[in-house]
Each structure stands twice: as C-alpha cells, then as structure tokens.
Length: 362
Image 1 (tube, helix red, strand yellow):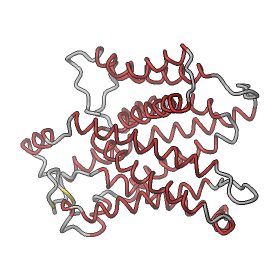
Image 2 (cartoon, helix red, strand yellow):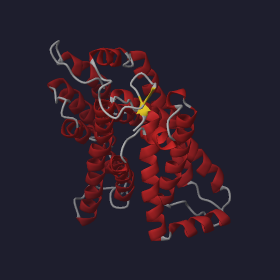
Image 3 (cartoon, helix red, strand yellow):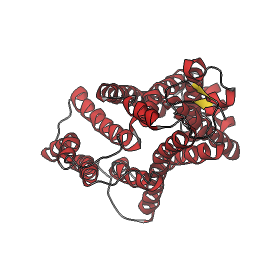
C-alpha cells in the first residue's frame, strides 16, 4: 500500500526495507525540537481557552422568550467531529507530502480501518462519559478526578507501546501535576449546597468519570502505537492531520448512530427553528474546536499522548487563573500551593531523570 515516507516522499513499498540505518538517523534528525513544542503548547492553551468561552456561551445562554438552553451533547460531539474532520481533510488533500497517492491513502495514511475505529471509539467515550458524569456529581468533583488523566495515559503508553519505559522521573512529574490540580481544586471548596456525599448518585457519577479516564488511557497511547507500527512496518510517517481526520471521522460515525438511536437530531432541528440565534454559537463552537485540534493532534503526533495530557491539564489551571485575574477573584494559600506544584512538576521531574534515562521523546 502506498504511503508517505518518513521524509515526506511517496513510497510504494509494503515492507520496512526503506528503514535502514541511515533512515533511522535521518528520522531522529527530523524530530521536532523545543521551539516546536513551545509553539504547539501555547497554541493549545490559547485555542482551547477560546473554545472554553464558546462552549460556555453555547451551553449556558438562555435562548428565546422561554430561556431554553442547548443540552444536546450527542449533537455537540457530532458537530465538533464534522468540523475537525473537514479541516484535517482539507489540510491533508492540499499537502504536498501526499501528492501522487490514492485518496484513501492520503486520508488514512495506510492505517487499517479497525485501528482508527478503536482509537476513535475510545476518543468518543472519553468525551461522552465525562459529560454524562456531570448529571450525577458536582463539577469540582469531576475536575478533581479528571485531573488524574495523566495516570491512565502514562500506563496506557507502557501497555500499547512496549518500547516506552515507565521511568521514575515520569512518575514524579505526573504525580506532582495531579497533586497540584487536586490541591488547587480542593482549596477552592464547593458552592453553598454542594456536598461531597458518597451516595448512590455520586457513585454513578464517579463510575462515568472512571470510564472516561479509561478511554483517555486508550485513545492517546493507541495513536502512538498506530504511528510506531506504520513507521516500523511500512516506513511511513503519519502526520497530526492523519490522527485528527481519522479520530474525528470515526467519532462522528459513532455520534451519528447515537443521534439516530436517541432521535436527538429532530429535537435539535426544532430547537434551532425556535431559537435561530443559537446557530452563531454553534459555528463558534465548531470553529474553535477545529483550530484547537490542529494544535492538539500535531502535539500528539510529534511528542506523544502524555505531553498532550500534561499540556491540557495545565491549560485548565491557566484558564482558572485567568478567570481569577479577569473577574477579580482571590486565591487561598492552599490554591497557590497547587499552582506551584503544577508548574514545578516538569523541572522537578527532570531532576530525577539523571543522565542515564533514555526515554522516548514526548
């Protein structure tokens, strides 16, 4: 099957003959550096902060005379899937590196459909189960548990990618990151009337959050596995746009099935007819998510799932700090301690790496 070689040129070979010693050296030399990492990380922080504003506007705005709110989560998943897949498809088809290949290979990167289906299904589960949990538990509790997303992702990388080692430095960094977000969240406390009571309702909510975390630990590392497998077996290098297109394509397919099963689309159509002003917010939501995913999937492709997870976790904290500054809130000492843990997690983790740890670049 045709594909794109690690140097970006068309390749008609079906085996790994092209990956000789010189090719491996060239591949190592082509790995992105710290400036690329910085650009992608800042891009994620900026675009997803905008996406957060767009999401809040869409889900919290009372529309029309009756003050109706948009609560159709399957449609939101479908909308973001369509927007992301469309942007990625355009970028793939316009890219010089894929010229001369079949349409199928230009879009899929030569990866079998079942691999993309597994990653896309887990991607959907992480989004949907997280949203479902909020029907049963308060938001601070959901953030508290989801802040530990780096843990399943870290173990997922070890399970799906056997060459990735679980080093002590990585464990220290992830543990400090999670502890920092947990400390920050607990330091804020809950609103009046919100209690952390471990009843049946909360247990159900925690179950959905754990399912979301499980899916987080599958889809990110599984993308890494797909990339490594194709590079090893066919000498092909997938781009972040391949991940972005195929993950969202399959997530969208599953979301369409869910919308049809729940009969949600006719309800959305009726809502839009009653409240046409929602269309503008829907467009903002889709565009913001698409732009954010360009950075996310490039970061995923070049630096791995754990880097994405740590970047998005820090982004949540930055969004909260921005809110504190913009709206004039104050932080308790315990919260400032949490901020310190988050921002010191990476440098302190590197102190434990020493000179002998040869980790895969993330």
